[in-house]
Image 1 (spheres, rainbow, N blue to C red):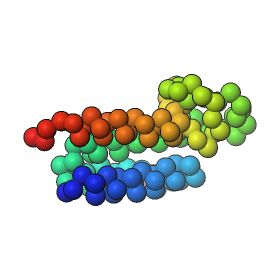
Image 2 (image 1 turned 90 degrees about the vertical axis):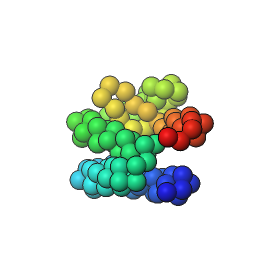
Image 3 (image 1 turned 30 degrees about the vertical axis):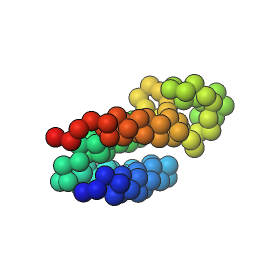
Length: 120
């Protein structure tokens, strides 16, 4: 499959996953994660196939944190860029938060790194 088309499909699935996660629709987020993994695994797309597995981990951590009501929204910061962000722009990990812009930057960096390697 064309890398641009594969990336476009991945971006759409990532948006759907993030939307479900933001709404605490964990079952939908899990379904998107599994479908994305199966699709990219079937396409032998090594760039995208493992990322949905990390999504499953994020879902479980998010559920554990429960995005608790009463969580103080000031002083929430991304563990990567160390900038304070509103809760809606942060994704919870086990012990840290990451902002959506850092996720995008990391994804772009991985994509650039992958693009520079010869195909096997």
